[in-house]
Length: 151
Image (cartoon, rainbow, N blue to C red; front, side, top):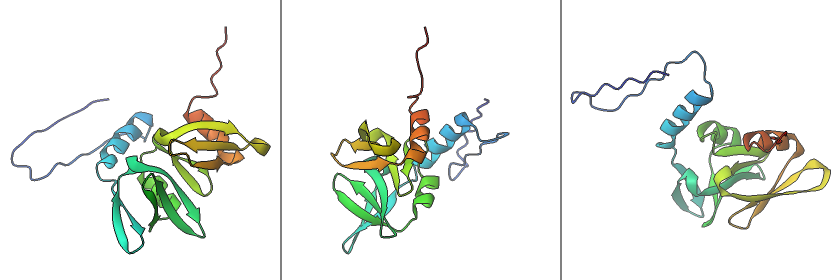
């Protein structure tokens, strides 16, 4: 990877260009880090709109076709759809755990096996959500839980 920095007082704003053959893990991390700076979200609670930082959100969930952000300060209604949030949020921090939930990996406390291959995901806040069987393998892969020590 080659990094070039051009510092000039004549530039009015910072501009970043990433040139790559394909978006791989390294370039995705760079893009996520750059996007993190502008990822403030707006959530609604009652008549008030609140600025939400992604780091403060435990998970996003859909209930009656409305997307909510769950935080330690309460839940907020979001205008975005889950797939829009998933595209916008840092992929190394937010993962899909079911069709209706995107979880903040940094807020997960622990996992517990459940019935029929599902997993209960517990958050530091004490709340819990279910990871559907379809997403368990992807979660394990992301967390490197499938590694076995072979002696």
